[in-house]
Amino acid sequence: MSPYIRTLVIAAVGIFCLQNTAFAQFSNPFGAQKTVAQQREDILKTSSDTLKKLYQIQPKAKALVEKSVGYATFSNFGMKILIAGGGTGSGVVMKKDGTKPIYMNMAEVQAGLGFGIKSFQNIFVFETQAALNDFVNSGWSFGGQVTAAAKYENNGDAYQDAVVVAPGVLMYQLTDSGLAAEITGKGTKYYKSADLN
Image 1 (cartoon, rainbow, N blue to C red):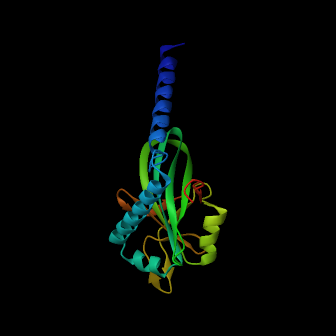
Image 2 (cartoon, rainbow, N blue to C red; image 1 turned 90 degrees about the vertical axis):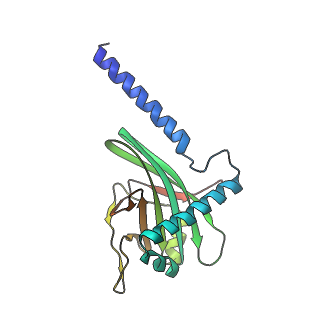
Image 3 (tube, rainbow, N blue to C red; image 1 turned 60 degrees about the vertical axis):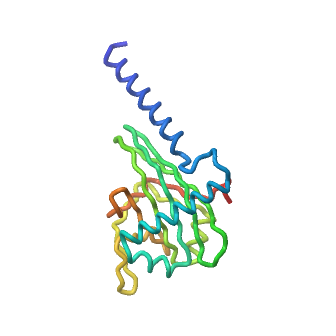
């Protein structure tokens, strides 16, 4: 084996180990060692903090959430190394009818060249009960490399940075630098948590 090929193999193995270590650490951001009650509490606190951050950055979002039938927040850790990557996260759906929270998971698969680690929070706002029920009961996913410009208008009122991602479903995406100007789905799947509900 030539020294050049040997170097490439060693680099690839190192990257693979780094990726697995990162996912082992962050695949469950709330910690598998915690009890179910503790994980629920952490998710609810993160959800509250996410909403506060959204309202600080975009105050008009509060009126949109208050008029909705419910909302969901998700926290994600994503990673991309060379030719493949992905991410996982946890979240919760809160209904305005006072029923108990519904805990959910998310999984993301990425493809293409690149290297990077990122975290973000997604906030979904449901305008109809049917849209909320479909999201919770049927699961939901961004198809492929869906990208949407951040603009939504309702009855002449502009809710800047909200994106229509499905009928009756709006979405905000928070990053370390603020609200995302464009939201990229990257084949993300949202589904009920079998452990926390």
